[in-house]
Every structure is written in C-alpha cells, then in structure tokens.
Length: 186
Ligand code: INI
Image (cartoon, rainbow, N blue to C red; front, top):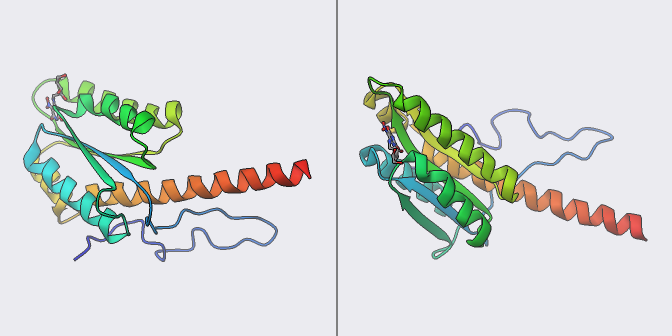
C-alpha cells in the first residue's frame, strides 16, 4: 500500500482557481520524467527504508524502469555534492535526497545536519533543478523508525512526491514563460 503523504492533491483548497489570476500548481504525473535519488549509507537501517519509500512513490506516480538513478554516499554530509553532480550532469528532472542524522552526545549532529540541509538547498539555487530534503534529523533511532515507514509515514516517499510536484511545476512555469515571451514578441 502507498504510504500516505501530506502532498495529496485533494487534501485542502491549495491550488484552487482564483478569478483574474493564473494559478500554477505542479501535478503528480511523473510519466516520462527522470529522477536522481541520493542516499547516505550512515544509519542505513533507516536510509534503506527511506529509499524503498521513495522508489515505490516514484514508480506509483508513473516513473518508468530505467528512469531512476540511485547514488549511495557515505553520510549525509556527502549528499549535496552528489546531488549537485546529478542535477548538473545526470539529465534528471529533480533529485531526491535521503538520509538519517541521529543526535549523539556531541555537537557533531548539528554540523552534519546543518551542512546537509544547506547543501541540498544550494542545489536548487545553483542548478535550477529541484532537490528535495528527505534527510531525517532526529534525537533517537525510534523517532527515525517512526518516520521511515512507521507511525508517521515515510519521509522518503514524501520527498519523492515533492520532487515530482516541483519538477512538474517547473515544467509548467517554463512553458508559461516561453508562452509569454512568444506573446511579447508577436
Ligand atoms: N552521517 C549521517 O548520515 N548520519 C549521522 O547521524 C552521522 N553522525 O551522527 O555522525 C553522520 N556522520 C557522517 C558524516 O555524514 C560524514 O560522512 C563524515 O563526517 C565524513 O565526511
């Protein structure tokens, strides 16, 4: 069964038509799209579940066989460089970033989690390819389990669905941008 996500298209009134405005929303049909998934090996008891959730969600929304590139990195700190490489050279519509940073007794957690989130965000800014953040930052292994296919769903699946929505939205915005250029030129 598909894990539920907060990205269900019919969950509320977000995206509803507004008179006098053009409203843009990304769809969830990923047919013909390609995705990169970067996943960290550290805490792989959790990250493999996030990966399962992400791949299942991508396939569920129409991503074809051969259109998912999975890249393993040692830890969450290394996710951004691989994500950027995929975004720049991998021919993908979006990159899904997955990992689990679990607090220990030292401030190491803050550095790893902070750099992972900053680095993934910078992939958007520097490449224009969406990169979504399915990296858990938890105090305990139990909290991580709950979010990797447990009580609170699967954040890997959520990150995959967010990637589809953003890839679709950007296609729409780019198409509507070139439409406006065309209108301005004629
Ligand atoms: N990497 C993680 O993905 N999760 C962690 O919880 C973690 N902790 O706690 O240390 C972690 N550390 C490794 C780090 O991501 C790098 O791989 C390492 O520092 C080498 O650069």
